[in-house]
Image 1 (spheres, rainbow, N blue to C red):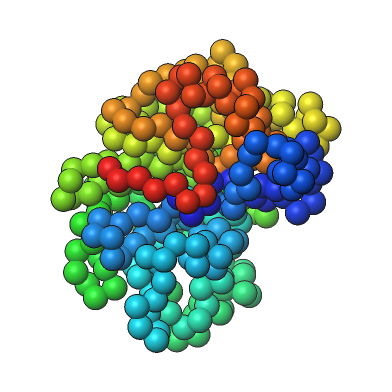
Image 2: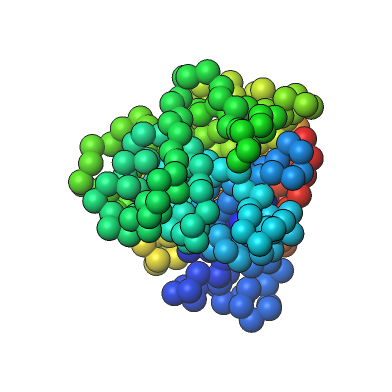
Length: 303
Ligand code: MLT
Ligand code: MN
Ligand code: ZN
């Protein structure tokens, strides 16, 4: 887990809420977190990044298996993007140092990032600098190859997940079912399966089925409460207005999903206001008692 926080990170640069103040001054039992991204690998040599956070450079440096093995080289074989939100895409522009990039996303997310975006030219300076591969929910699993063309040993299926267009495109594009996806990733060698759903506006039957098959679930843990930002005086939108299903309450994801899946269940994309960040909070205790974990940067696991 390279980064486990929602957009803005924890603490957030312009936030003086109790959580952000407490983690800055060391009075809170909580760890700082960077914006959400996961590195996955079958062989431990070549890696795929799930989402490209604005903090990608520091995240790569934080995890030695992602360091180059030659003067111009990267063990990163590809990047898989769940949606067009800048906390998931902006890092692509930071990978502009003439390294060929393989990017996997829906056609919708590709267009949202590349069209009308003058900055994108930095990834189009030579043929083959950025190669996009289309993910479509409902289509058979694909196996993204390694940079040298060998099979990666990982298969990827995109899962349709209710979401929204990114904030900067709202009102400029019609919402589409392809605005937001999750991933089901299987290791051919071990058969282990992870399901990665970092933004979930609401549950669907397909989503529940995928979760039921998973050996490890990574799930949208942005907000504890629907009115979290409103109650703190930090915003006017409810969690659902931002396409995030809250964790807490009788209708929340914790009560609704329970012990879904066959293995670990881990909340990711955690907003800095969320009380589960405080290791001694009742909300954190409720998550733990229900058999769920709260991701932190640097978490490593084998499936
Ligand atoms: C979200 O998860 O709701 C988005 O990251 C919001 C944003 O783009 O700032
Ligand atoms: Mn986000
Ligand atoms: Zn804050």
